Image 1 (cartoon, rainbow, N blue to C red):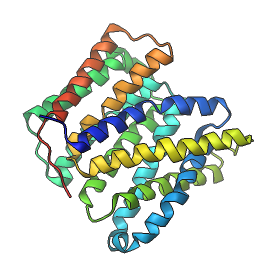
Image 2: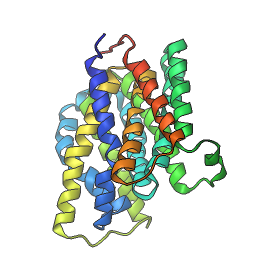
Image 3: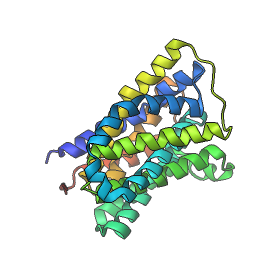
Length: 288
């Protein structure tokens, strides 16, 4: 059985997100760090999305509360995730973020009445076991929880809740929902700078341009692909499929970042990949 289009698109977008640490670290090295990086990247994309949001105002006026929830949850998820990727260790951040399957599966059950059958429970168990091993097993429990860890964890929770709203509100166009996410992320970053979380850096024109291109190209396309797929898949299934992002980040950080993966971490990656394969081969439930 061939994977459906939403499954295929979600796999490719997850790979793009898994590799996003590379341009983030590069831009950070050029002086575009943290909150200002996020403000520039997401702010650059929003002018292209704003006209779409305005043209579709008749749709979201009827469900403004949901769009506001997406603005906050999606905006915070992106702000927290990107910040954690910039300042944290790629593998640790990705693993904490990918408690996401738990939030997605349980949230789909609680809010959308989705069924959790035996294969799905197995996929969740494999994903979490794999994430635990990638993080270092019991050794991970010995480390103190940092602010970066909290950012990664809360980003995963917010993203899972955001995806549930995306799927539940089929009447809202995907473009409007993505525009709300970008606006939310930009506004939260702007507020953070106003309150002195991080000062505005002195940047040259190439740094501005590269950051804007990253937002317009990489972030916007990856977000559209992810959210279109999420809209057409069960919340639990989408959450587990996106675990591919984790294995992509770990593998790329090991290869390009010259980090050596221990055998137990490799085993964790295999378990995570097995969870994604279980979900990808399930019959599709397409909505809308």
